[in-house]
Length: 105
Length: 105
Image (cartoon, rainbow over all chains, first blue to last red; front, side, top):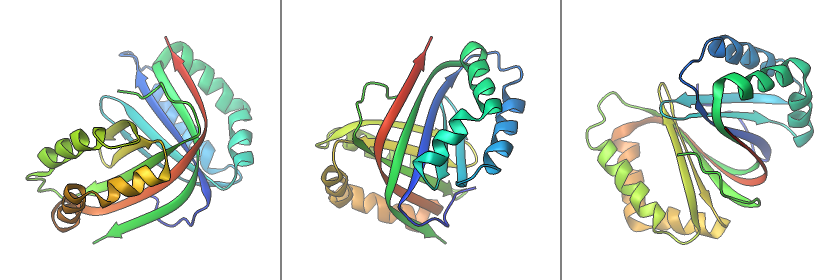
């Protein structure tokens, strides 16, 4: 659930969202996109949490891998649907992970 | 709730957590730390979501601002308490935000 096997440098996409009340079709599509993301070149992992807002962070080897995933046709269609139907607001940030610390009991 | 007024480059700290069942004192301390973080030099904003895991992303002007906040005494005490009492596992990532896209209805 928490991705803890990576070594910087690599890339993170932070996707912060506020959704509409009617989320018909959303969870199926989100699930499908997560399965599809895992098949992409350079995919390293994903973490996701939601209450008032949603935050999904996906991890990638390179910037080029992120661009290729952005341009994936099914992903593009899902994103377009998301803007029309499910999202009130989102912010997407592309980041280079420079340092990392972990803790586990 | 979603931070959407920033211009890259700046820094993000992604803090992903799994907590213990007994969270006595946790929410008070988390709230106190959020108030304290907002008073620090270079603080730009925070986003937070929780269900099975928690993800808190705080945004900062520079790496030096992040190190100064890490070394803040009250924050250090809260972190130590967190490791002893509240966290089963966490991962903390320091990232440079390079690109950003927003959408709002």
